Length: 348
Image (tube, rainbow, N blue to C red; front, side, top):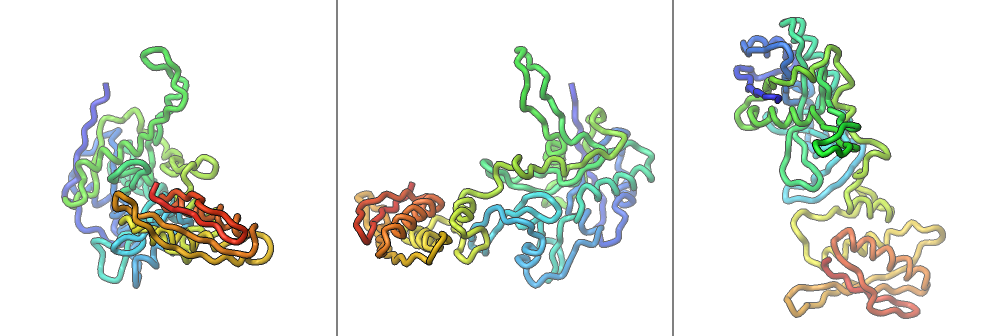
């Protein structure tokens, strides 16, 4: 039976650009043993690597660190984007941090988190002679689950996964898809003693010596899903918008995290539907949006589309159905004529 011990590392000073993080850890006098895993918040790694940059706004820094927008929503504080960062992970705001830094600056993620983990591991080995592993962590949200957890964005010397495929369970059933994300589990476990408010960015996890390797290994980058393996390349709103020719960061504003009234949702869906990129001449379609009260006090929207071209009417009506779905509305055709279509848009 594996027994884990997780120890916070106390006594680290405020880290600045150019600091030797390995030397700072050793100087705390922390009891390090062969086979330990040192878990380090990416923030102190980034500070030591001089990743603090001047920025007039966090948004500009986020844009510069973004390779691809996955999802975006308006919030009371502005627009929040989930993006693929230049450092690799998919995360909110590309991991750009505006807290605990000087006014007018922001902190970027380490440019190469796995490289950072390897360098720190080498520094620790040079000073202690111990066979250690290093995991660099950051906080991530998760699809389908509320709250955030710490996950590994960099790793060295640790088997980042435990592939159980081909084994059998206690009942003799073969395991076909089980691959444990060990590095992420270590990161989350360590976060229970590190803590965001206590100012403890480093912890030692003991009891996993069997997963600590002699070489650095492939790193946490192997945990990233890409290409055909990424089933969630876009949020549901963004997938619809991309199909309609208005991808993320387009000029039609994203939905708000606070539920908006049905008229606002309907008007935004209409704007998307009318941004057609069909082959041929532009389709001249006019749209009117009104609302009606339901017996229960809720409202639905009525959208009337008008055009001289029946093809144009049908095309825009189909696009409106898709755009409405992205707004969590259901579109139903109530009336059709040679030059008009009336659709009812109601909450799903």
